[in-house]
Length: 141
Image 1 (tube, rainbow, N blue to C red):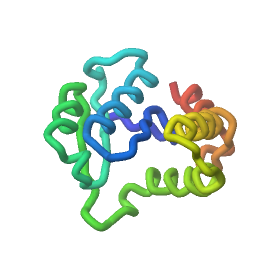
Image 2: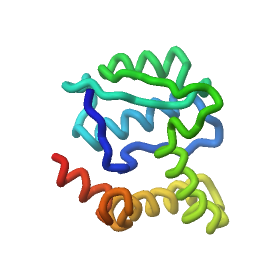
Image 3: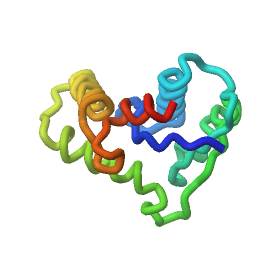
Image 4: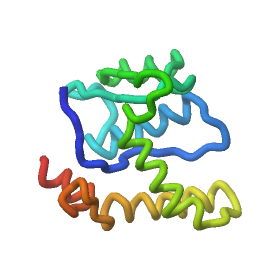
């Protein structure tokens, strides 16, 4: 099973309510960003998440299976098992969300999207030997 240790954020979607369709859209954006298309992945890889209703819903789990991904859930009440994601969310809040007063969801999407592009392409990461996630992916490919 393949792991992608680059810390690159590939798919995201902002909505006022968390729904399985929102999570599915983010997953599909990630698959397109990484593979250039939608469809079953050649090498199965692991999709880890918490046990939230969005990720355990019939809709989302069916989408995950249809793309040939293996879904793994962390132990309930153990967010440290999903530490990379938890740390990313903390960084996003500290370095972007808490520094802006969003006028609309469109404004938030634009600002957050710009910050994610910065995070992936210009912000060096200590855990990646001071490389950006995009650089780490290019070197691993």
